[in-house]
Image 1 (tube, rainbow, N blue to C red):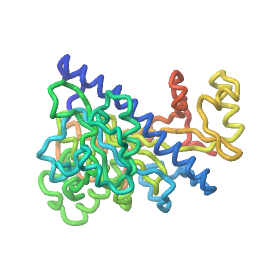
Image 2 (cartoon, rainbow, N blue to C red; image 1 turned 90 degrees about the vertical axis):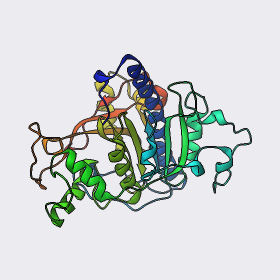
Image 3 (tube, rainbow, N blue to C red; image 1 turned 60 degrees about the horizontal axis):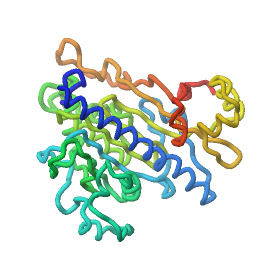
Length: 352
């Protein structure tokens, strides 16, 4: 289990700070790739963009759209330390999918630049985020972690591509159920029906419905597995069927998505922020065809039913009670307006 910052030594705190700075940079780029670039793909192909319905962002929602090739999809695993080799049976990274030129030459539909060099895979090199963006469209996941092969400490690298996540859902549900004290030993100790409920609740814990597609399932399974490490990790999953980018981290679950704003909304928000309308549009919004869109984030927190009980005693599950709740919502500034703060903007439960 990862440690809170307060329990780290001085050097571990520096490492955590470095990781968080890098994560912020990575997140900005992935928002662009997942949401903004996807939206522009729809515009270029003259296809109507399907915005996320408010109900889809509420706990236990199961509404989904059809997959679309116009929406950019990926899984990015970013680990604060090194993923323990003991997990290789479940998060499959081997010499065959290590980020080296020989392996990448075999990638279909990917043209390796002639000036490719080994340093491009390191986070502290300028082309790194471009490299991640180029590779993000390949199947399975990308793994970014502390590079274990060099002596220099705290250097992060994109070490593996084509990373498969292969941990049984039953094992992940059992792991979570033990942590939350709903079982003592085996997932099936209270019968098959109880086990099925726990598997469904595993998906709810990560902001998904149990009918979610394979990519989203792989991401939440990986997040549960990486909780075994003593360092934090972050997983970003961009999903075509949900039209969101979801973040799993030590802070819980966040969902990023596009919202369409009316002229009245824009005028009201600009007035609230003491900005003229045009400046507000340029700072926070992206033009569509006759309308504007913004990048919104819904932040979720766990309820008492999805936290370990204070007394540590075994308890019975109550399926009807929600395990997640929306606690905050933001409208993010454009990537080129990073001197501005996100705006509090309630949308998921707004009456309109």
